[in-house]
Length: 111
Length: 119
Image (cartoon, rainbow over all chains, first blue to last red; front, side, top):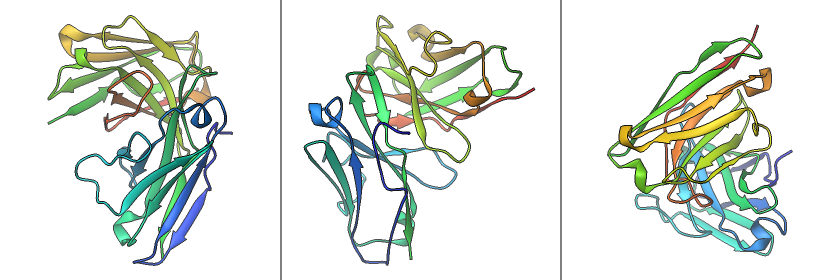
């Protein structure tokens, strides 16, 4: 059971927009700690996608965006492409655990 | 460019020890907090431990506290994870990763090294 809760899977057709939710609690997201998102393509290491709730590292397309409200955060992917098919993870800091925590991951399928 | 290369993984019996290393290149680790994150086969990511840039602060996941020790040698630009009293549930790919800080995002990841705990 992960501290941050994500849907196990989402899907969408090419060109569509999908969102992935990440629900936490008052000791992590709700406490104001940053939410970060990672993309893990099959058989590869994770890659930073969004940091500080809504910031994109250089090289990440603006089709990817992040937001946060209360104890939840969301990753939105617009203009879905086949290459976006991957696992996506949210991450934050938890002050009751004194460490980082990840969501369980969401598998994105591009139909 | 930034590179993190893990080594030291392998098959080990339950109760035994193993030490992982992570050689960094393309940057100086003394400027960054460094993490270990693991991923059991077919499962999600699990944060394991983090060490501050100067080694003075260390934090661990409850699942490894008291068994694993994170350390660094800034003169060798290398990060370590000493894993003792290994259990079957420690079987995973272990990723070395770079901060910037102790509790924020992870900016770069290594390719990982597989640790299998089995008799």
